[in-house]
Length: 513
Image (cartoon, rainbow, N blue to C red; front, side, top):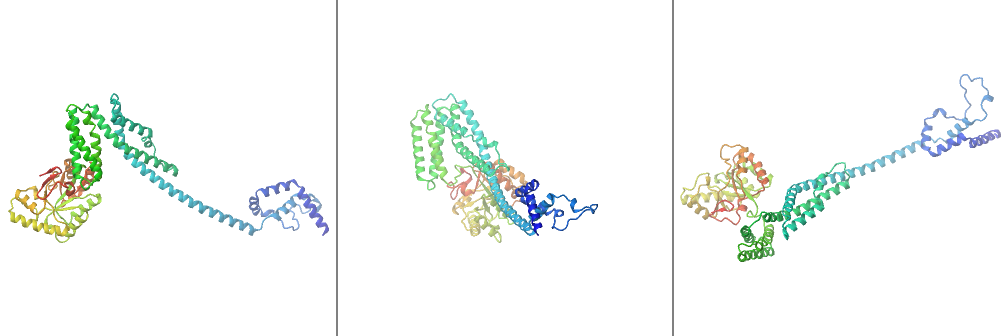
């Protein structure tokens, strides 16, 4: 036992002094995890302290032939003693796997949130760019024309209009509102960059929209100066503006703020006084009244509900219904486009399921008028027969729509003084038309659409037939085409509001007898 102890002590001393062992010990301290897994795979190097085995061919070797230093054997024994137990290794592996999974889960959540934020920022940026592009489309030609006009009128001095236009153009140029057009909302941009670009688009759009109003007005005035308007031209223009102002004042009663109306009244009176007292060959004083009167009129109009005297409107009308097969399709198309129309019905068709169809017309905001009991020219009828036809037709239509009948369209547009008198007695205005695409004949949808859009004008009443399948096909294109021309589609009641009364005969706006 004493000898064994001395041997162990000697071995320990050799281990402590052995440089090879010191290097291995340092490596283990630096990277213990690598050593553990390396040692787990080195089963062939393990020793349990049993008697040494000799390899074939060395059977005759004696114990005295073995090197006395014992360095490699001792190092292996020390390494074996320092190897962790399998359970420890397993626990370490489980802990490490759990940590990796938890980290992956958190990372994945963060990545998903970032992806959603990025997608939202990208969509917002593209929406802002779309609005910016639309605004830029209107701004660019106006700005170029204004720049050319400023160059052409450089010789005009002491012009407030020109100075104001120049200042506005300089402000927009400094803001560099056109440069964002060269940028785009790219999917590989960062979320913050996308938000910043969207904000830039929004600010540029707002500046252009605000600038366009004054640019167009001042450019128009400056263009008139450039063209050398003479005094009579200026007087004519102010006269027309006074008439428009008076119309806006009269039609805005009870519909617009009284303060704004009072400002308009003063502007009208001042302009008229200047016009009456200024010599016919003088233009400066007259020209100075144009802007304040125009602005006062525009403000009152903006405060009013839609008025077709100041906005380009058209009215779609449909004759000879309701038709249970095609009228619902017409109503669907109108509803999809969000526009109203006016239906002139034959009394004989307002029965059965068509009663609900008429109720739908009224409920969806359409106007419902009469085309008598059936499509028969009525101008030659006697007063007694006319009275009965009006009474019977009005009864079934008003019962189905829930509203009194105030509009009447004579079949084929044929009327007489006797018919007009009966319409007046029945509380109805006679509504004719100014645009007839001829869908009562053998025309297909394309031709009906083309004839409608070619013939339309501001304030026109368009006559169509909801019982014609080709008209139904043409309707979406007609609506889109009218809106593309800048027209507001309204009912006859809205188009002619304030202009018709029982017994009136109307062919369109400003064409009422």
